Each structure stands twice: as C-alpha cells, then as structure tokens.
Image (cartoon, rainbow, N blue to C red):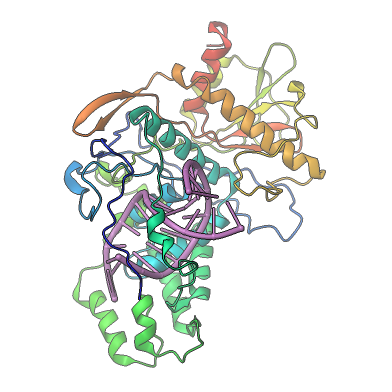
Length: 452
DNA sequence: CTGAATGAAAA
DNA sequence: TTTTCATTCAG
C-alpha cells in the first residue's frame, strides 16, 4: 500500500509561469568527425575502462529546434505554474541518450532498464566527457536562476512522511544486470547503431539472463520480459516470436536514429538530411556539437609571450617551428585532425594547486584522470581543468554567438551557450583541448587583439 | 503513478 | 543523513 501519495499539490513555484524550454542553438556546423581523446598515458590498472583510442564524444550534444509543441505531454498533477527543477548533469545526459535513441528500441525499450544502462554508461564515461555534461548542467542552472530568480526547490515532505523508510526499499523489478553492463560497455567502446544492435543480439544469443529479484524468486521468461525488453532466451518461443515480429513485420530500423548522437565518420558518409545530425532535448538544447579534433596537431607553448605555438604533426615528429596564432586558428579550423595543446607548466599550477575538482561529484578522491604520475598529479590535472574551464567561462561573453531561447512562448536573450571545454593533461603539463575552435576564439580574444 | 539511474538541494 | 524531484515512458 503505497500510502497516500495523492496528487499532493506541490507548492514549488507559487506564481511561476509554466516553462517550456526550448533553446535553439545557433551556429553549429555539422562538423562531426570523430574526435579523439588523448591517448591515455599508461594507466595503472583497476581504472574504469579507458576508452579505445578511437572512441570519443559518445554523445556530442547537438542542437536543433525540437518540435516545440511536443512537450507538455503528461505534466500530471503539477500545478499549472509549476517550475521544474533544473536538470542535473546526469539527467541531461539521459535526456540526450534517450532522444538520440542510442540504444535502439529493438534492444531495449523499458525505461527502467534504460536508466540502468545509462547509469552504467555514465559511470564508464571518460571524465572529460562527463565534464561537458556538468558544464551543461551548470549552464542550465544559471539559466534557470536567470529565469526564475525567486525559485526555490521545495521538496514535498508530506509525501515521504507517513511511513519512514519505505521510499528506497522497493526495487522489485527483475533486471538483468549483466546485460545492462554489457550494453554500457559496448557503448563506451564506441559501438553504436546497427553495430551495437548486432553485438547485443549476439550477446543475447548466448547470454542467459541473470535476473536479480528481491526474494530470489524463480524467474519466468514472462516475468523477465516484463521489466526488460531483452529477448528471452529459448525458453519461451512465443515471446520470442513476439519480439521478432517487429523485425520481420516492420521495416528495418531507420539508421538515422542512432546516428544522431554518435556523429562518427562512418555514419555521416551518406549525407543525410540536415537534421539527422542534430539531436536535441525536448526542453534542453545543447550547444553546438564540439568540433572534432585530434590531439596531435597544435599546441601552445610558453617560451616567450604568453603563449607560443607550434605544431606537432604526430607524436614522433618534433615540434615544428612556431607559427602565428592566426595561422593556428586558420589551420585548426581547416584541419579535421588537429587539436590544441596548451603548455601550462609556466602557470605554476603544478603541485600547489591540488584541490579537488568540483567536476567530480564524489567528495572523495576522484577517479584518477588519465594520468599516472604522482598522486597529486591527478588532482593537479583536475585543478587545471577546472581552472581552464573557469577561465573560459569568464570569456564566454566574448563568444560571438549568443543564442536566443524561447521561454513560455516568449523569447529572451540567453547568454552564450556553454562551450565544452574538454581538456586532458599529458605528462608534460600540457593541456589538450578537444574543441578549440569554439573556445579558442574567445580565449584568444581575452588575451588581447594582438593574439587574434 | 511507478521504476530506474545520478545528483542538486533542502529538511 | 535522508528525501524529493529533475527526465522518460512502458507497464
């Protein structure tokens, strides 16, 4: 008896207008080559699976104007003027994930299970990539505050009141943890689209669903299917038939669906409709997808001026001669295989800056970033990332592309969309930046005209 | 309305 | 520390 969970009239936002967020982002070219993470320095061992060299921006946020009138579906019992909470990083990530149909309907449709998969994926996500979502959430929060200055989160205590601890103790749904983990693993490995589907189908062939029920009750195929849309092994032919029906009856899944959030090279060869490369949130639209860059080409160094630049064509070749910043920008914009590297050693950020990064939600020691070195190095890395992010954040206003956001039917001027500073520090204290072309102009602008 | 995830914010 | 509620939608 789920106790009185009535339509509790919440009193969150007393007089707020209903919000319908639509934040059409601006420019975004469909530059979506696979960006690459820095090849992680030799990692110790028990670290979360580092992504393969080729894998990367799993969920390049993209923009697109959602069919405005789509939301509002089931707002339930919320007062008409209810103001939803600002989304956190994970919620944003989840939204994007769902919207992008990363895991096809053939693989999983149950949202509880999807949440599980997404949660696992989230945890396996490279730190740099999660940082982008945190940045996004930060921005969303800022926007939320701007729009609803007097908003305050007021959780409804009345709801959980009655019985003390019944809130969290439910968990009854049989879930195939292994399968979820497998899917998450495939995702962070870069599997996507049909390739992903096939891999999972293959997995399902040999995998006997291990379902964990609260009371270890025997699991029937039917029960299993109730909470997971995973195909049932061989036990139940009828349910299998049911499952495959869609495959045979319906046309093959449109390939576009999964291409959205995985704008990797192979998916875009086909020159799909423009919108194919734009995924969006219903309410949240993200900044332009970070342009992809490899991490080999550019670097800032510190010899003389604030920054000096040289180009490194590949790990083997020694730094080429310094070149003008303008050239860098030019080349960076032209090359699909370039990244920026900033030597920060001169900034004196090395060991003295060991403070935990706000980017990691865990209060404890963050999982070591892609770096070996001394223990403090990890912290340093985070600190530098944070420093850079803040630094860039301070210059977002310089970013030429502001965007308009729609709100409650109206339109207001929003601050510049968040940029996704994706940094990695190498063993030489150099910061590698994944999306230089958006951040760089702002950053350089901040340095002064002489660097433009 | 619930579940399922993570996380921000409040009690 | 514990609880709500942000998203999403099948069940």
